[in-house]
Length: 471
Image (cartoon, rainbow, N blue to C red; front, side, top):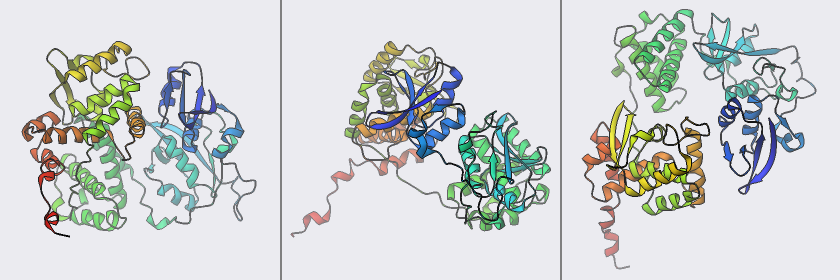
């Protein structure tokens, strides 16, 4: 793998030269902002420190011109900080697999200051079985480990890369002044670890999504650690109230985080401990009632016109808008889900495990046919770089970002804005709210009613009393 700095589309990028290899492609696609260039027949990523380090963590043998990327490399200081022999203080990070998930393992250390820093890392927890600390194996977490121990200890991550880490990857910086050991939570006990594992297995058997399983498990882990591993059978409502007031509220965590944690605890005690905590005893935040963001018809038209240079990109964005799809619903569509003869699109296993059908316009069918004629996918309606695999979420977001900029739309547009715009424009065209609810797949009509607050057709007919003033 060779990285080369080059200029394309009015910006600097990092072009990657490598022979075709599925494993290499999969790793490159994980880098944020990665794109495939048909003219150069190569992948390229943003010319940023984050992208460069992300590549380097995945390809330790990557070749590059040091003069081009010197600004992205933190070189080790020649001397340790006063009073600290950093070369003798070492943190060893190694890759392990826990419950089929890749994790970073940090061995137990005797130094209280180092142990306190480890406890502060988000997502870090103690494992008695591994006799050390565990953290999810991600490039961001590895960079976080390096940053947290800068100026305090050397980080030896040679086992992560399966060979000695480049010298520049072992670096030092000033220690964090904001570090407060008193805020550290208690290490997780073996008993609580086992109960969390049981809860995780129940969530998976109940077919909860991967993200929900992780969120609920992490929430319960924090709750147990805050209570100093108090046996679940002895936990009562007072403990929950104390956790809410002195941990969640004290640290200023968001209302959504608070509700997630409370829901996780409530579900755990009901399903695993077979008893019910009085959740109503704590003051839960009111859910913010924010209006959906909507693009005008002219803005949607500009966006789709800008995407006309790539038929696949235009077809994906057009389908989201014309059928009010969620991002995942679009990417999961298969060729067989398009019934062009009847003008229908079948959306299977959508949110809430529900199927639904939505009308497909003739213009959209024409776009889909043109896209299929050019790309001829095998299974999914929109495939990624590798045949038979669906298009990635990150790539789709980059597509939207690119054409939003080209269309001159100076708003933080997301893919869900297109779904909101579809519903709002239907309402302004006189479509009954009940039909819109079915088309969007909403469980409650109250969810759909929010679009009545952003529909401007009737509002524009209202005359302000200010216009009657003779000024």
